[in-house]
Image (tube, rainbow, N blue to C red):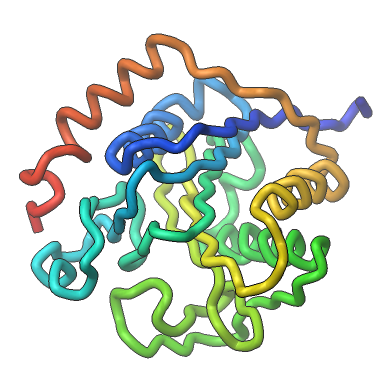
Length: 231
């Protein structure tokens, strides 16, 4: 390991219930400063679901998608289906240089990483040069600037939340119809960080305290109609 290497944590999760997935990401944000290292989390879903941005209105979205549960994220952005996607989150502590980036620069950096990982596995992806939003409020109907495109079609988007504790980026990849496995793309994603940013990956292990925090947020927020429907 070189003198300038960064230690990042990698959490490969088993398929998890939708409310628990959203709760886990928020707990990682709450713990970001204490952990002191970025945490990359790959996760999937025990059942199909949809999530929507913190500032969106539930009533505007419940007729748009049949996917249930329909859960409000802690990040912004639009409606995201989680029936066949590859989901990833990145949590950055406030001491890390990435935390100092503007929201736009952070979005671009994350999506360039996603696109470059597709390139590593033979899929030509690029960033959208401009906003081509067709239906406001739906993440994968049209593209925002710096979204990831494959042959003009949006295949990846992300949403962010920054506070004094850290930065949370939640990303969804709707994989293109090519013969690339999720495992191969994830491996390329991690290898790129190691090569470009001198990242050394360490395995993240959740403990009993973290799991209890997740369950608390499921009970108090993400598993509650009152929270999800409150706007």
